[in-house]
Image 1 (tube, rainbow, N blue to C red):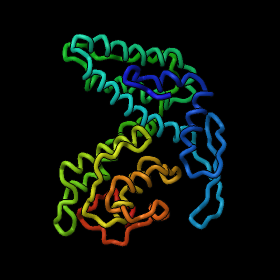
Image 2 (image 1 turned 90 degrees about the vertical axis):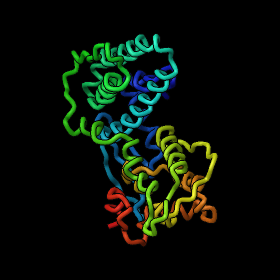
Image 3 (image 1 turned 180 degrees about the horizontal axis):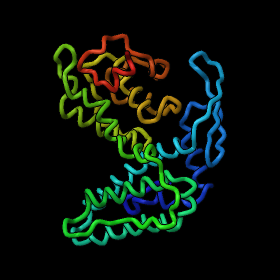
Image 4 (image 1 turned 30 degrees about the vertical axis):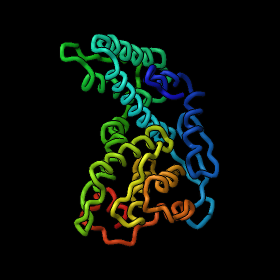
Length: 293
């Protein structure tokens, strides 16, 4: 269940029991490259997948890890929706709007205290939303909102909190792609400012909506195809880890970049994570270099 401009917190309101948690995890894992998986709440997800040689291997990941990754993405979606609604409103409406959003967040905590105690990562995006309201949307003469967390007995670990503090999806997108607004090793501009902004718009939509955006203009960065392809493989890995493949990334590369007009989707898929056979030039960011070297 997606949040909307009219109800930017709907996704978080909908998480009210373990049945819902299992359902959203199951939906999320459908985009993985797992052959099969078993979700055993509250702790583990057991899966089978094929390795690079085609052999079936077994593994285990945690519910906390998968759920936290999903919550982080939905946090960014809700923040963007709140901001857009805030901008759309008349100024005199926004004070009431902020109070309504805070009260909704507070009610989620009151109603789901037991569930949050079992899955403490659920608390983190709620705190993140209140922080966003206080730091970005609040009028200077308004008092900052403060959550009442009475009834929450299990404090999220520092590692869990860090996962929401270190990097947002948009920060990762910028860290991976920002080099394309600079120059390549031949001192050629990789993408014009206009084209780079278009790429950021396309990519942000892809990540936040989990679907291909409407492509109004193809782009042609002055880079080898293998580096463009690997750049998006790194973005995928940094956002989702190596275990879950979003196949729409292949379509995105084919549709967005004119460079791939003579390349098949099958070829893009088969070489998606292949390291480029190029020298790791200084213009390539460290987040990509570390996966090459």
